[in-house]
Length: 73
Image (cartoon, rainbow, N blue to C red; front, side):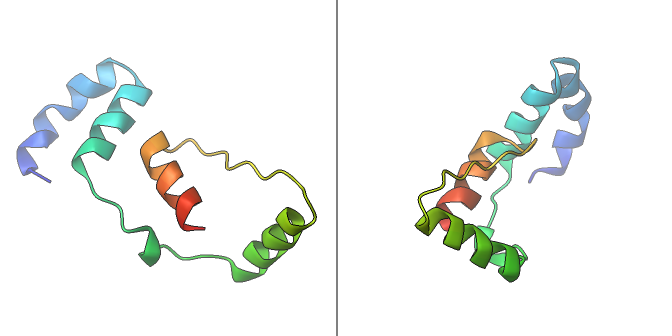
């Protein structure tokens, strides 16, 4: 990420948190394979999914990153 973005961050924030998060997500790559996971929780979620339950990923994160995590898991 270009260090000069520090000067535009306040401008993005003035347009709202969603805009700020979108701009950051557009500038920063996320390697979801490096994120820590709670394996016990994931096993339980996989079991729930196998039982036919619908799983929903709810997060205040940007949609781009949430979708990357969801597809990875």
